[in-house]
Image (cartoon, rainbow, N blue to C red; front, side, top):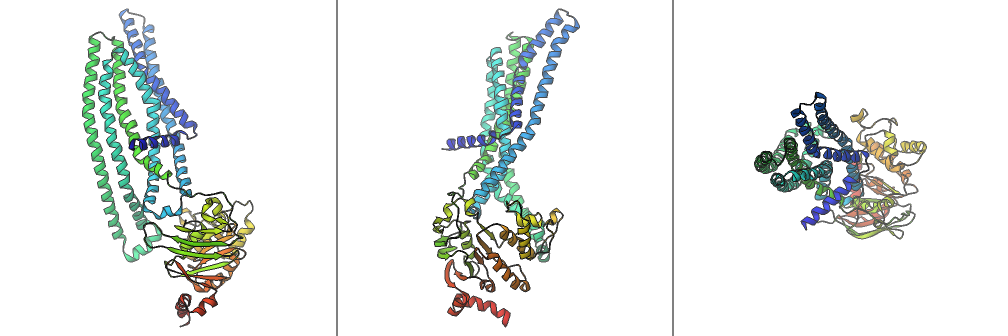
Length: 583
């Protein structure tokens, strides 16, 4: 079963690596093949050159005749080095092209994953491992290209030449080669285990670095004096990481030392056989020089072949397993059907649980939202409001139940159609580090957008130049929390949509602006089906209907007047807020 998995992984990785459409990759592989052939035929070239040279010396030939074999040998060495250098030069752009392809695969796959994957620790770690594997895939390309286009052709041609000279020479080479090959199996196991062990520490290390150095945390860190605590946590994490790396390196070095001892013995055997072949007249002096040079180079290549090429192959395989596992994660898919938001949205017996949490975030929720109706979702923290909004948007798939828009099951449609006519502003709003206009029109494919953009900018009422970069990192400005929320709202409004979700749209807006924003939100949702998630019950009053949630269930729904008169959960929530304004 493990062999089958290993073979499947190698095939999958090879398809990705060697189907990269790049003239650089083809040039690199071609140069490696030519270099291998040139290197392999050095036995014949040195044999002819040295024997010819010795013959001319014994006959006391003219100096010009002596120069011919010497020039031939020099020309061979120069040509071989030029081709080998060319291969090295071509390897750089080939690696860059491959890296670009690998990260494109990671980005595309991440885009297609179900959002629930980002709620699972193992999925997050697998995504991180996939990023680390991108570099391993490049190493895999170099290692496998070296094996296929240099090492194997070189070994085959040289082995034939050596076998013709004396078969025993091959036996000694394999005595050196095989122990190194077996040693790499251990390296593969170590590498595979290492990436599994390292990733949690790397993720924690990245998080702690942000806590200590990033601008968002600086004010609290200084006021609370907590930097030393984070630094100690970072040191402890780093120490554990280093100890793991030390153990893996120690195991790999132990294997390597044993292999070196066997290799030295192999060198001695090869040297003895070469001298014996010359003294026994199996070969001439020229052939001896060529064979000894070839054997020395072959042993050098065999060590490099096993240690770097095969070793690199095994080592990169350990991490490439994670890359393939990442690509095999279940994707969010469905039928290519357009969603018609001029129909009712029917939520039927929806339940949902976040991974690794026993409690249901939604428990048998049913709700009908009519076209052009505005629904306000209210309730305590953790009551399921945001989760319900995400399920209705199609971002989260329910554990049970379904959401239908007209007759179409929302979660059976493909993501591109599911999100085509919907937009949202979420609680964790942010600004992209580009211009104000770029932030707002980023989802647009319209050729002319200036008029719509100006309308949106007027609605969100933000005093900022259109081309102003919204980040100090790139020479721009840093907006306040309220203005960042306005930008996020503008982005949601600008997208052409029939269904919109606004999650806590006034959370960062000051009370003086809040009433003005209420009228603007009415304008935003006019002519659309809308869901507003809010703690501020003053905002809920502008909705056509208010839905009260508690413990993942809908406990009340109706208009403000209806719910207030019932003196239930909504009445309690409303009065708990009102007393801070009127008492």
